[in-house]
Image (cartoon, rainbow, N blue to C red; front, side, top):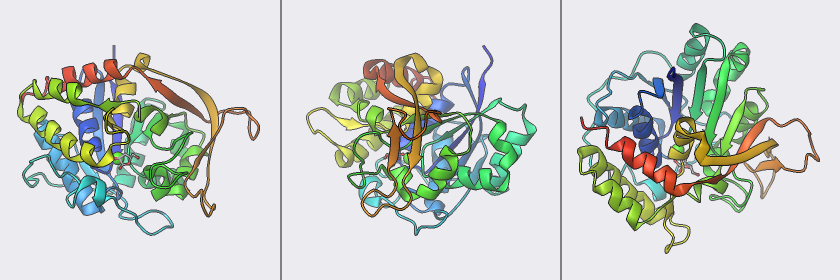
Length: 313
Ligand code: BDR
Ligand code: CA
């Protein structure tokens, strides 16, 4: 089978880092054309550096990393050092990056890569706020028809994790999310409904530790740090959000969901950034996204562990 060309737009972030490693460990399935960084978990300067620290860890410094937007389209930046640490990648034990940023803004890179490749062939995998993707769609509306699909981590049909209503990636830049969900590009949404089923527990962490490579040791360090802060239910484990989007690209059979119309709240006093998932078709009968709400978590962690073991650099 041909590999799927993919651009990963991210704000590393420990779970973003694991998502990147999962993709880079899977060259038989995914051709990572570029990694684009956005302001999110920590400011852009750090997310762009962290993306390069992770590709170096994977032995893939050949993958271009482009720096993108340093703040949301309209709102002031919101970051999450309380979850990810001051560097955004606390626990990883990685050195400073020795790799240069690729030339060109991330938004330009997204537009160019979509225009130079056959229409419908490139997948976007955003796992941070949607600012870069939205700005690309705004500056180059022709790309909406050229995107093969957008498989993103963000949103929730149920409760949020920043406010009672909103999930972090959508809350940080709701206007960008609104542009993306109204773009007409095919979207697969992996929100908290599914990522909070993908729980890192002691057994799963031990299986990754048993791989015993520099990559697995770094991943265990990151998951220890991040897991201690993101735990929803201490006895069950901590959610591993962003790798779910990459795992969906690798093995969609691990997941279940259904087409729905999703609207983004950009004005609500208590509901800003909410993904309103219209399961009943009351507001709109035309689905704009496949909303995933189930995962075989055991299968997902088996896939992750097996792929991480391939990164022996
Ligand atoms: C999302 O927010 C970030 O903190 C994580 O990296 C993930 O993308 C989860 O709400
Ligand atoms: Ca993220």
